[in-house]
Image 1 (cartoon, rainbow, N blue to C red):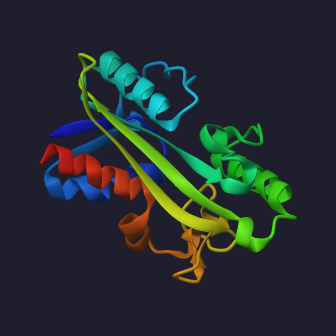
Image 2 (tube, rainbow, N blue to C red):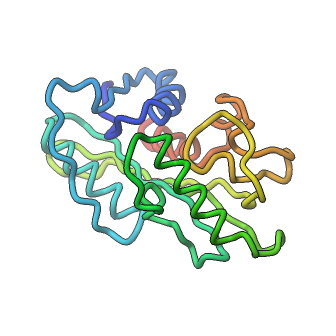
Length: 199
């Protein structure tokens, strides 16, 4: 089986392909297409809604079965922000690393005075798999619980990974190996649920 994963983020592609490849599923990304269709407008106020918009839109535009996700960070002390705005939280321009740095700096500034026991947070990933005709094949949600640390730690991963501290491991998400992260991450949980619905 071949599916299109509606992202050009190589980190996400690697994570999803590592889980789905053993099931005989070949994962292609938007970067593999000769012509990339216009990105659907993500105007839902939920992760699930945005994942559905992308999956249905790209599946219809490419004629391929399409998997899409919408993911982000929910911080309890910020009433769930940055939430669906996680990728554009700081409104910064530039490449992914520059945007990540700006987003992390904004988050650290907002939560600077919040006591450690009130810094609970989680990564959320909603996934949707759609056929080209618009039929939703599967929808799943995964979470990855932790606490926002007081300073970034680790070089692995991307986005807010250096800020999500995992008390049971005494490390951040960015200090986990790829294999360790896949085993417990929000995206890993959502992808494994998708695979369980297919097989």
